[in-house]
Length: 168
Length: 179
Image (cartoon, rainbow over all chains, first blue to last red; front, side, top):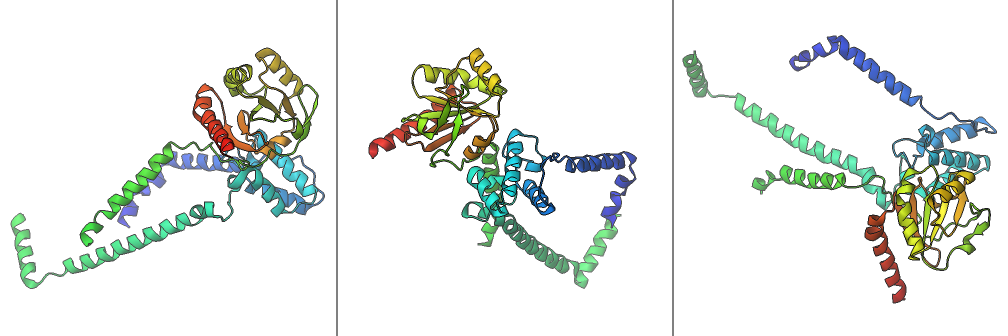
């Protein structure tokens, strides 16, 4: 609790609050930055599929945006292609395969589970497990040592009191 | 044994540093092409000059396929290299005029010179999708059988030609002699 108390000044600072609000508003704006679709669909299911696909496919050129949020030329072409394939009756799996054949694993924000992507999928949980195991070991050892050192026999206790008296 | 446990974090740190240090020098734009060792996609389009063109019109020898556009500034940087390769007859260069306007493309070729045997007109970028193109400039090395063997993203200057393309070409030629 004491450690937390040290940081309460942070929450009192007006500048900090305004800075946080500013950051939040930037985040909100960036999520609203999706490209306006002028595509027409036969029904809402198609429209929904288009939205899902263009959110899950990554723009190859701009790397950190999905198709729906990118102004890049390739992204524009790929959005048009996704729209055409939906209208032509291709399934989501077929559209994803079409993209994979041309752009590879990179096109998916959630890459397929393959030999090449296995580390990508299981690397982070593996490191979490290793880290957790190590942390648990350290925590166990630390708690056992403090319990030991806290208990002094009467002779040690007398010695301690003697030392403390001499100090002042 | 427990004496050596002491070194485990240090070793772990060292290994991780090595991996991350190597990561600093990787180019995130260098994405593997899915079309390596695959035949060039089927196409039936026109050239910027208006002639009909398809796979059958491609050279029967190794050639470069260069993705370019009149809007593309880096294309001007690699332009002298492409001109030299074409003029010295080192390798034919086929252009793909990608997401451009025909008139602008013709003007660009007139102003800067035309290194291309012909340029395939891809105004919509649809052929680019089949090739897995991200944007101009990009250059593919295609062998005599029309199979894509190598891809370079961004500028192809003399340095890239010497360092990347010549070894790739030599390797392919050695392979074909061996057969």
